[in-house]
Image (cartoon, rainbow, N blue to C red; front, side):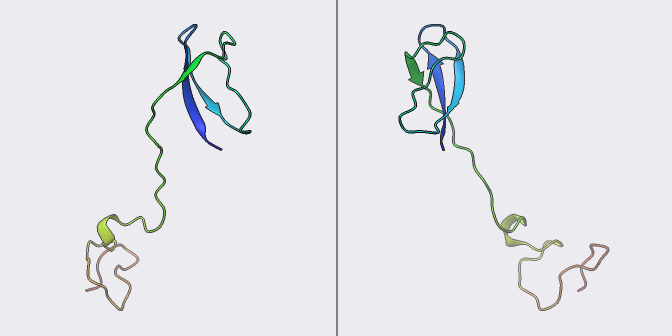
Length: 78
């Protein structure tokens, strides 16, 4: 279900509208007008997977290793 941002051509109100049904037509929440202009907005991003930056381990190494990279106190075991 996409969320679009609209600007009312009658009163200038800018608002977000969640499209639930394809036949649903947005209305301005302030004045009720249907004369709207869809605004250009940046898409939201979702990051999934490993939270380590650049494929590094918790102690900054990038090479693979056979043992856990850090001890319980966060220091490298090597």
